[in-house]
Image (cartoon, rainbow, N blue to C red; front, side, top):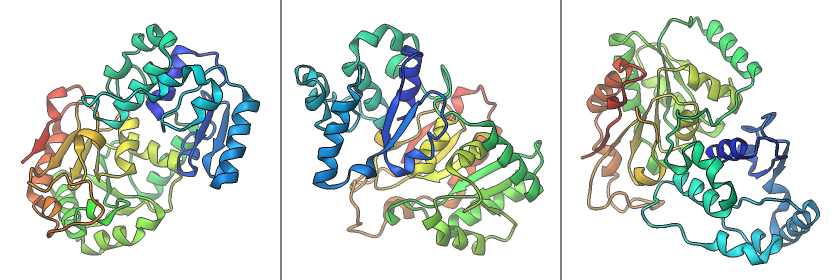
Amino acid sequence: MSPVIERLHAGCPQAHLTLLVGERARALFANDPRVQRLVCMEEFEGVVGRLRLVRWVWQTAPDLLVDLRQTALPLVWRPWKAWRYLWPVPSHVAHMRTRHLWRLRRQMPHLHPALSRKGGVHVADGEGGQPIWLPQEAVAAVDQLLRRWGVDEHQRLIVIAPGARSHIKRWYPDRFAAVADRLIEDAHVEVVLTGEPDEAPVIQEVLRAMRHRAHNGIGQTTIQQLAALMRRARLVMTNDSAALHLACAVNTPVLALFGPTAARKYGPTGARDQVIQRRLFCAPCEQATCRFNHECMRFISADEVYTAARKLLECGVRNSECGVVQNQ
């Protein structure tokens, strides 16, 4: 969603933007100067809630409506324009970020020249602006947190997010620990482990398996502060999770470990990012459970992840050749 907001703001800088989002995303866009009003989707749950949402759209009477979820709202808003919202996304537009931007251009054709000046769907993160707005208070809070941990501004920082909402998308805690230990020993980096609050047990597993000290960021940051922390990092190592997309939004190089989900749909989008994913007959399966023995993640070794991480750490920030998608 953040690239869409960036493009809309670029095309209509004077517009009053109301954002209808889920509770998790609400905190990310709080106090964003590009957004004048935030409305939480959880306020409209159930049948009665959906009817209230329809009435709210009628009462709001927006001049423009961007629908990324393919809901019935365009039918309520202006039925004669609904065909723009129901038009199927072409199969070659695979990545969710690109699909959102494709829908934006389809739904707002009169803004096409303005959106094209920013590159439309072809601009990668890191070009033409930063999709996530970070308040100075969040940056200052991260600086204070790093000082409390004894990390100065000259030390190289790696953020590792070993969790994921689905357990089968997670690489193994002992392997994350092995890679983190080697990076601390050989690359002399500081490591921060982070994730969502319910991923605290996974973080503890990694910390217990490590021989060297790492910093536990669970519960230490808001989502905006976590974004600021990732922007400060030289590398973010993660599974297919919300942390991956947050790191992409602040243009920090990402090393992503993919198993059952498709990197071409959900992977990082930066020129310096790298994906490690096994090419197996069963992967990516896009399933919530594994019929076999989790080979898609089990066959990813700590040695190859360490090698990829070292390569990304040594790459210059302008070296676009550092990003390679591996499907083996």
